[in-house]
Amino acid sequence: MNRIAIQGIKGSNHHIVAQNYFGDDIVLDECLSFDVLVDSLLNDKSELAIMAIENTIAGSIIPNYALIDANNLHIAGEYYLNIHHHLMALSNQTLNDILEVYSHPMALLQCKEFFKKHKHIKLVEDVDTADVAKRISEQNLKGVAAIAPKIAAEIYSLSIVEDEIQTIKNNATRFVILQTRKPTNGIDSINKASLKFELDHKRGSLAAILNVISDCKLNLTKIQSLPKIETPWKYSFFIDVTFNEYKDYEKAKTIIEIMAEDFKILGEYKNGRS
Image 1 (cartoon, one colour):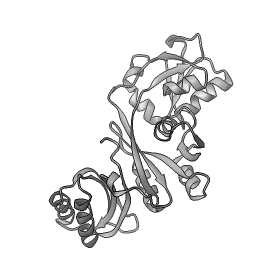
Image 2 (tube, rainbow, N blue to C red):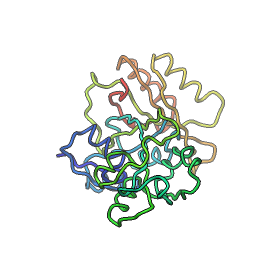
Image 3 (tube, rainbow, N blue to C red):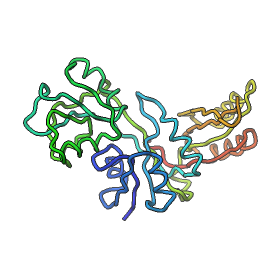
Image 4 (cartoon, rainbow, N blue to C red):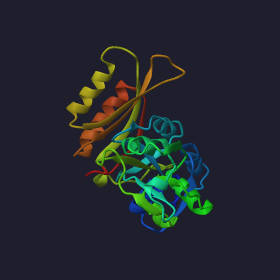
């Protein structure tokens, strides 16, 4: 039985990913922050962790790149989840009865247009979507609603007040599967990699790396830069590449390792969208 660390509690999107990726035979370590989630891995409370890394609307969750890098974690896989936001509350309440809505800041942002039409509702930021649903249920909070996945309403016996309230319906989040040891993914199953390297702040340094990626027939699917706080004007770059032939990736990897500084393989795994 796998011990999986998730950000949030049962009923959260991280919980849905855990079930979809690993099945029901899991034990969850519920963490209310990504720092606690990393600590769960490092202290052997969990064997694996699920971490949101980017969203089609909000973009990259930049601090999580730094957490993966600084703690030498390995990406073993990835999962893309379509995000659905539902407004839920205690039974026998209508939208007019709801005076306050608590949810994660990202969920509130993604449902902004819906609440513009209901100005009597006060929006309040909270730590976790599912945790709000649990609190409403346990404390019997009337006039208060949560924005959360539908599974949270089922777990905490709440009623759906409004379905699918997100502004943009085609909204997905990419999650990565993390572990402290290097994964043993077979070469035949690997067609994506996450890499990190550093470059000096000089003309053409990044362009040269991008040319290598192109010449070696790799597809760059993500690039994210982070400044090195202790070294002004120097940057760490986090990239994701996909490829059809492992030998092409291996060639690119060898060249980039020579050209760049502090080269690190964060993960080699199966593309979650292939």
